[in-house]
Length: 102
Image 1: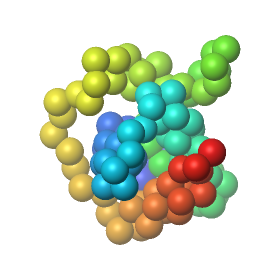
Image 2: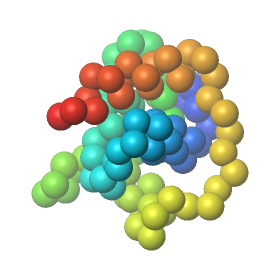
Image 3: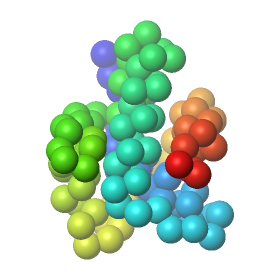
């Protein structure tokens, strides 16, 4: 089964852009939590379907996608973004609203 989004970068960038639109900064570790929660909630909402092609590991600080974590070490990577469809954007908006203040 194909994930709903072809690249995890697009989801990460969506969260970063959302934070910037609200004039806030999304810490790298908190970005990892958003990605993890989004993946889990999406699977729960859509019969196990994956939101994005990410696999998370748990370290002493919590969940993270090691590939995205590495790619964002020096800040936002220079990648061509693919716009997300409306269904995914609405879903991510709900995740953002639920967890942004935690």
